[in-house]
Amino acid sequence: MTGDHLPDHLERYACDVRDLLGLQDWTITITLVDEIDHDPRTGGQCSYLEPYRIAKILIRRDATDEKMHEHLMHELLHAALAPLDYAAQSAVELVPKPQRKVAKQMVYDGCERAVVALAKALVAGIRPPPSSPSAACTPVLE
Image (cartoon, rainbow, N blue to C red; front, side, top):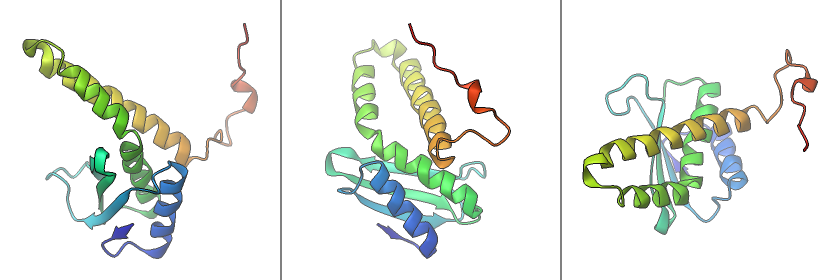
């Protein structure tokens, strides 16, 4: 992985996440930027070409280390889930043209919500917060 002055500890974290998500055969470029899409709320962005296993990730340079961990996990998850995104986008093309814009937004929103949830769980190490009793997650067997 390459990056624009990515601190060593964040480079190691990004490599660990890449390996965890099975992206070792991808060429991934991580670039620290001042702004993404002229939106101060956007912390990261991932563009990818899944058939070629190439991803370009932008991360805001003013993020804290904790936020950078979250953004790196989130954006690398987008790359890992690229086959699902490509399949969903292909299915959207089967939707009649008048409804296609809504279908595309539904796919985008669903994928984004899934990536947010997965990233939060993985960054937290899939451990319950200290205030949560572990018994709160009791499986139901039928």
